[in-house]
Length: 92
Image 1 (cartoon, rainbow, N blue to C red):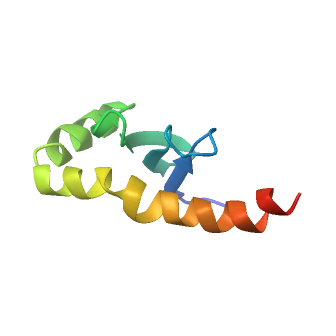
Image 2 (image 1 turned 30 degrees about the horizontal axis):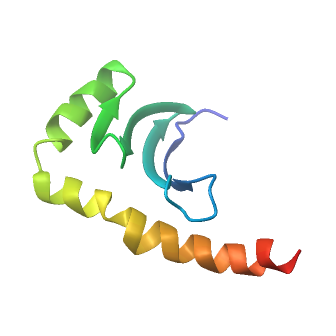
């Protein structure tokens, strides 16, 4: 079918049990290609396509939003990881 596919995906990525390496990623994709992504470790949006670079330049001007997104590691990622880990890892 003809059409376009646009989506946003939030991810929390970590590999240690103390969550010290937790990273919050917020990706915006169009037709399965990531255009732009926020990375809490980098602390800003990074564009991966010509359009994504334009978005990143514009969105990185808003320091309040960048601070809110960086805070998602503590506000969103770690609490949810603790719940998921207690339901899975701690049962083995």
